[in-house]
Length: 224
Image (tube, rainbow, N blue to C red; front, side):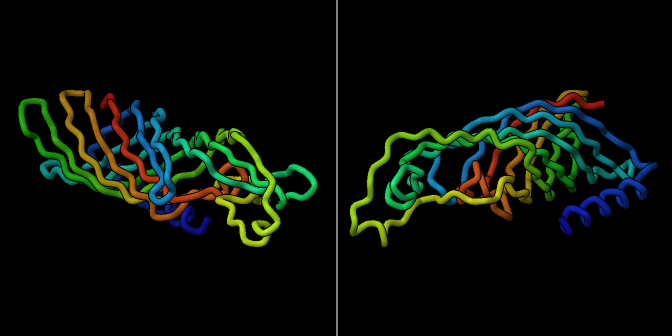
């Protein structure tokens, strides 16, 4: 939470210092393709929607900074993972094999620095980099039991489960480094961004399942 407080204060100060800057506002709609960095999974696609503001402090210089807010739905599939089963006579006597359909919705708040270049009549090319905080809104991940079996006596002391149940009930927040580019014609643009996680998203579906989530996002935006 300390990181979030520093982030919010920095945002307030930046806005206060740039109230007279040229601004470009936008709303965007797109898709993201997300994957765990280390955990074996099948990447999935989710919806992305948001808005933001870019500030150009100097009229004749293409450099800018900006911030935004978006809702990101991130999806992945994980197959054939083992957990302790709740079946009697004892939790650790049985192993449950499950598939996981990862489906988590986040609020993401990026701050970015970039540079815009006019490459033709009404055509602008932009490059940017930045930092983003991702806060989970809803974890709709489902775990689908495939089968279960009883552990052999010699397995009970040595069997290594892929995941275990946890008491935590909330998916953890994470933060990202981002880079991207966009091309705009008049008041429309298309952009592609890559978000590289710095911290892991953990406690997914109340288990030890967790990893860094990297994403590629493609968006269409209306500028005004």
